[in-house]
Length: 502
View 1: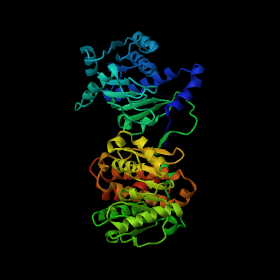
View 2: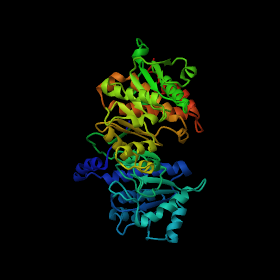
View 3: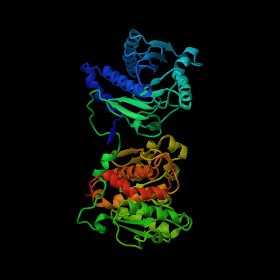
View 4: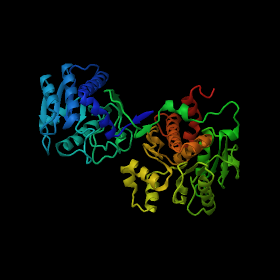
């Protein structure tokens, strides 16, 4: 599991080491230079003779960058530092000049020819404009003039330098992942001590590239801010049947989905639940689910969890009534329920955390607006983390906000950010499959959910992980359909579990 800590926690961990004279900057710069050298060797076969351009702002982030540049210069790299502040880190600047590096100040406004030439000839660019201590508001002043030319260089087919973000891509919100303006997009981000929320939260996560963490000796205390489940975590969370288990022990999911206008949503939701390994699916509705899946049981009966809302239209009074009843049972009987799409407007004022909402950005904006906050889809997309938290606080539910990075927020600080699926997964019906997979997982672990209010958030992140990896498996590198994603779920789960089920 990848754990992140907010800026305050990282600073608190640094303070005692700095008081004791620990060489944190030297450790950070050494690790940064090592990884830049490794990238150069992989890209061009050698470190010596490469050209590294440093984008240097103020503070310790600029110091880390300058000291790393000095180490690279000693290894035969031609280093040019483009400084965007009047007084860069003094010791770092001296170290770079002593090692033979060149320093060019960047003025506000048009870039002079030497600065442009340096960027044009770079093999690697180190983004050290802003770091952990940056104020919100994005890259400003002379540094802002470097972002667009760097993006132009990266946009050239088969050309452009490698970009390495120092600690964080400049201009991102460290603790919330927001981007106040244009952000340099990195191939690799090298951070020091511990990942921060911006490394995993959208939209900032899209600028991080591969994440490398350099150990500088921090002892981080307290709970993490945001987590990301990894493949190894599936074994601990997935409901694997015992040798003596039967279908009722493995979990029964009740599905209220589909309508005359959207019958396929019911088929896809039940498909996701079945292929995730639930013991039984009960379907309530008129869609041709049994014809597609003869193992589905039509009609009411005892269930351990519900999936309600996929494809339920606003005029379908019967299905909406069934969905409303299932949500009500979550409060009165404690049954977990996944609330998707057409059932999101049926929530009572407050629900327990084993009610899991699965909106996309537009649906979340509608939900929040209905509860008194004037929110647009663009607002949610600009700050998914903030708005998912607001939805959790407004409803009490666990919230899974779908997107390129899926954000999950639950009670007591439970928070996850999953980026497991390819861009091809943004396709009609994929959310219905995800709802079914999540319903199966909640049913399989219903007893544990009743005992731990934070578990639904972890299981929601788990479902997103499996769903995303199934999309990769369905057609690696190419288009997928929702049906193909569902079909790939069993093999994906088996691969992630390894020999556990045996």
